[in-house]
Image 1 (cartoon, chains in turn purple, brown):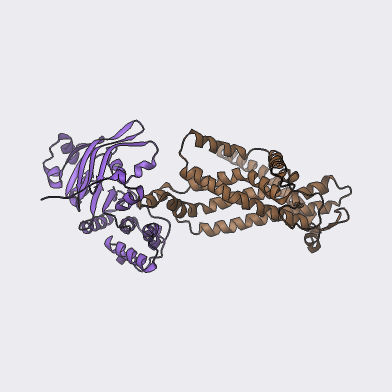
Image 2 (cartoon, rainbow over the protein chains, first blue to last red):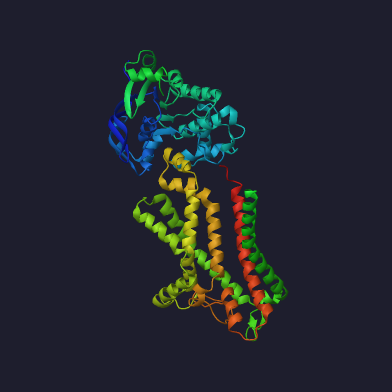
Length: 251
Length: 277
């Protein structure tokens, strides 16, 4: 099967001050796949995601070497705003703005210049439907978003990201604060989104990576130890360290 | 037992702080309120300020507050936004932030002298509302900047990340996801510094205040009377001044400052209702 590459990193090195967080990362991400990233804490998973949509750059101590290609173009040629619009990020803890459900989602389109009311409410409705939240909130769109449950908030965050029409969605341990049922709902939403979006899921939960992703990469101490089809990675890991991690001998 | 001792000491310290304030206000109110008549607040002073009212001083103080607000509010808030949201965190920025904090400790008479030299003398505004407002504005700036800075810093960092991660520009982020949530804090600091400006004598001494000027100002280049300076004048320079009138003037000044604080409390309560994080 020939896969179309959407993101490619070439010799990517990331530093915080003098600390090397990601070492020489060469990785291709295929269109419409769900790529799982597993690994213990401090292995560079989150830094990797935040390098892709440049949130790392907010930290003045951060430096980066190497190239990231997005849809065949060097990402450095794109403005931060355009790149972040195309590559959305879902944070670990559900982070909603302290405004209504509707305004949380309408914010993205608004900053990208969509002002027409009916267009915006259409976008809001579609985004909520895609994130599997519409049926639960359609009668109370003006309710303050922080009053939703954690799982609903996280799906609201997904809807908010979808509303700016990204190509890639990054998830940074999206279910770490959620109960199993909310987790299942978020995972369902991810499966539905596969048709239109490329998704990268960073998770501490190896089982979740096994359930959701097609391919999976294992990060350790800033290195990509191994990447392959998820079933292969979990059943016949090539590297001893991967084997130890997925079988629960450390981590 | 030890806790009880600590409790008593702490309570006593609080009492020591609060009691003088309450006594002062009580004393002023008791001695002054009898002379605060409709005539007192609507008439200019007469007969060497020993009779009549204090209308020009009230109007003067209000005009000065508005003028101070006009200059210090936009300047203070904008520079705080720059310092918190835009400036790189380097030694130079930290030096500026430190200087701003220290400036709020400069004695107000020094601001008065500075305003006199720069606005009255060098820029030839003369002794005028303009020069006085600018001097008071410069005096208020450090407090407004510091309060705004703290209000902005107390907005959760995640709000900025959310906004930026959606592809919003820096300015959109500040405008929609930071400033609205900092408004209550900005208001508190601003009103505090403006009410301090309203009660200051030293900065207006050489820059705007008139000893006796029983008419209302017509332009920003006019002098005005102001409540704190008027209080000083009638207490020191007018012989045989009736004591009740001094206390009545002080009472009016306190009420004015209290009204300003009341407005800020109401506004803050209004904004806090919307605070959801």
